[in-house]
Amino acid sequence: MAAVGAAVDLSVAGGMAVVSPVSGEAVATLRTHTPAEVDAAIDVAAEAFRAWRMVPPPRRGELVRLFAEELRAAKEDLGRMVSIEAGKSPSEGLGEVQEMIDICDFAVGLSRQLYGLTIASERPGHRMMETWHPLGVVGLITAFNFPCAPWCWNAALALVCGDPVVWKPSEKTPLTALACQAVLDRAIARFGSDAPAGLSQVLVGGPEVGEALVDSPKVALISATGSTRMGRIVGPRVAARFGKCILELGGNNAGIVCPSADLDMALRAIAFGAMGTAGQRCTTMRRLFVHASVYDTVVPALKKAYASVTVGNPLETDALVGPLIDGRAYESMGEALEEARSLGGTVHGGARAEVGGASAYYVHPALVEMPAQEGPVLRETFAPILYVMKYTDLDAAIEAHNAVGGGLSSSIFTTDMREMETFLSARGSDCGIANVNIGTSGAEIGGAFGGEKETGGGRESGSDAWRAYMRRATNTINYSSALPLAQGVVFDIG
Image (spheres, rainbow, N blue to C red):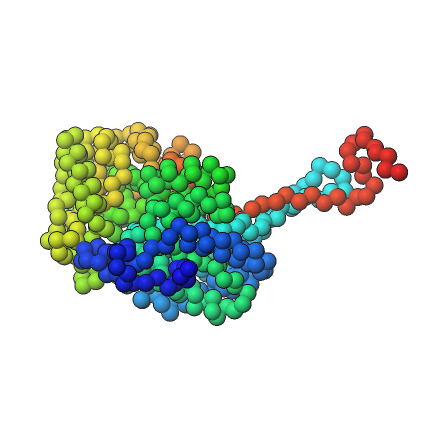
């Protein structure tokens, strides 16, 4: 078997073509891993777990610290790889690598803070406590739009928690995954023999590789990033074997612009959140509810911003909007806009841009004024479409905001404390991320990322997300030898 995740041939005839959305042309051909190789990789990871779980957590944190050093040295190269393979702007590519560095720094500190509780016992002469232990092999499945950061959110925590990782990246962005693994391999080489073989591996292939990972009883946790459609497949299959899941899925994210909002601030946040990364973020703003009293100010300003935004090759220009990932994404955008028109929507923008060749798909972002929240507004289309609707009552706006399936992030723009607190309250936004006076896109690693409401989701990155990568044991210690086994029960033990 070839070395998993490292020595994949880039010139195999009949292999998996890697196409850059920047040009629409193939930039590499990779040999995909067979089902037997997937099983072998999982076996290697399971054996690595037996050794890695016994390495002290602060020592495991040292590996992640070294990885952060290697990431800093490779930041420019990795960022450019993201731009080539995912079509992101250079600043967004570099920003994604910076997220990897940030979570590594977080995880290094975490390696000394895997705390359990001391619990009061109701029995005299007893003490209770909880202990957190490594969980096992962690299988990671990631999407094209963030080809490296979500892997690192998971991998950095998993490694300090004592778990090996097996990564199946999107078939659209495997080169970035292989590059990330190469950088981690440098850190492992510096770390030394405490790191067992197979601690981190990359599997290249299509859905069949992901299915093998999902179905393997030797994989304790599956953390998957992608569409809600994918989550509906992964979740039940993992549950059928009583495995654990973290699902960070799509987000039909919305913002609310209140009468008291700082409109300049709101407009900048909305425009970037809706158009950045060509609308291909799980946190992209896709719906906007604007109070009737400011609607005629906000919408014309947004139309102006949409008309002036630059669309171009991210490797050659400083354009805000780069390419869609492929032709299917372009078709989905066209279908959604046509449906919106049929429901009385007014579409501004949305045409294909004359950038790149025939196989590259660049579009002008679309702003759509909708009379009601229906049809495509209720679904997530992974493209730069922002549906705008008018409201007069905040409670009704929040109800409409929550009336969609996918919901990852949310925003309200207001300077009214009562409106802000209502949005953040139990009857406010039902999303895992609820922001005030910033857009829906972007999340700091210190706060756990996720909580996609339709699936029950999961949490990656900061806060207490580390608990998902460990198993908890409650320990009860009897330090009173005179206490009988049970009240009123005495055994004759001779």
